[in-house]
Image (tube, rainbow, N blue to C red):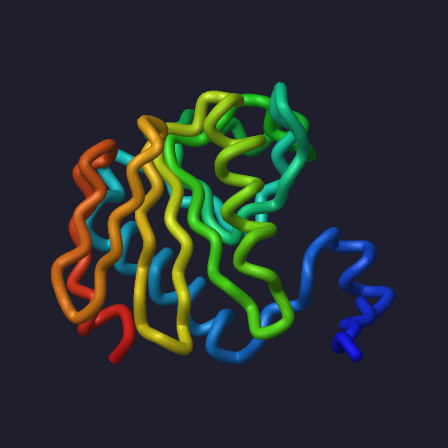
Length: 158
């Protein structure tokens, strides 16, 4: 008999599984490391609701070119402009194929140029590029050629 994973009410409202401790640590650490090194070039937005041409999604992290903010104006609830890069952190109750499919069927057709799937349990990052290539990084320097972002995975997974 197949194991069936039932989503909680909170997960249904979020539209995705709840993050775990490791997921939360990595979301914060990746955001911090990217901002620390690339804040003059990029803005890093977490848990942003995207309403893109080919679908909706809430990536764990979105990387945009430096944005202009006017804090007094109305806030944007759903972004329709695709980020340069999306980062998805695989949660324990999340299916890998769902994330890979979202990258190929929603993100890339909508204009996202690169996407990462971070897999905490195996300390690996997969880099998806719009040209259909997929690269794997583990215990090395991760390099996204689209953004030029380089991260030492030993620091990410310390």
